[in-house]
Length: 460
Image (cartoon, rainbow, N blue to C red; front, side, top):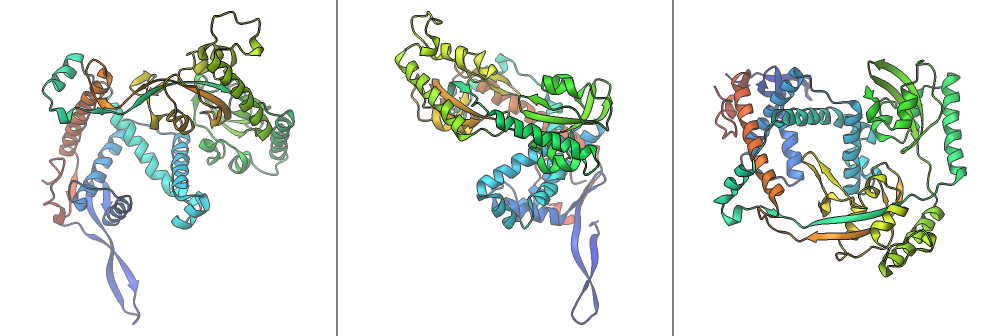
């Protein structure tokens, strides 16, 4: 039996009333409806993005939505959690990408006919659901493993044109220096934070309002500076020491310096070994003159390295035969992560850690420079924004480049293992969806029952 459409009354010129369909429930999965309007919006968005479908999109899109509802339902059962901070971080990243594509925030607002604040709000629920679905999928396949023997068997008889192509990969060493921040700028930031504390203490405004207006932490500013319950080990040590010592929610902490900038903190609640606080982050601005001074120092250092000359600053301190990039990193680099690894950048992912990067996985500033280097060559100095949001000056060395090629088991075992592992995970998720359909109430409009679905069991 077809599902009943959603009906509404509409005004017409002769003042008579018509009953007209403004939307329609086309599927029900569990107790969650799928509306025809949702499918139509997704189809329009896909068309604008140039998405190509292997099957009829009028069938593929509602099935895709139905599968998402299965994962969301299981996520609720398994108490999968996504924090507001994570949602905010994803939202800002998505907005930044859209801005980069369209040119400016003003153009984005004009195109969407919404303010940035409204765009954030419209994205919130969808991004929350996407993160929960991702977590649920990860949980379902986290224990799946493949052995070397399975990998060899899978590729043994695979046709040549099915063997994966490994894109060009590079290994990069960097040396970074943080430009000096003028004392006057630090004092300006601290004075502004003291002013915030005074205004809240006098009752002129709330901490949350000031955080929304001024905090430079995009992940929490939208939520009035509030962070979710967090353990000490996740936080910057200086920030954690102050946050965990707060006892009165009505009081504001002293100014705290962390690797991200300067903060004031307000306690919200404590729960066991976790604390919930709100904070305001301000980042001192680096002057152009300070940046230029750092770039000049690195330019001189790079010249010494190319010639194998010991820098004057190390005269009498360095006794090696030839001054190397690795030596320079140990003496001059500010970045502790790469300094402890002889300058070598690490590519961290859910699969583990490697020193190899595809160019698109490097920070864009590094990728643009490395793409022009030969192996062993040292770049001219350049600036970049590091993962802590600070401007740093950098010189880079291309340590190794492996040109794109068909995967070879002796050279690219991890790539080939990932192919097999992804196949096993996809098979497991497909089976889970099919089994879940069997135990879930599903009701479909008659017009969709003839669809060529990816998963069996929708039509009963």
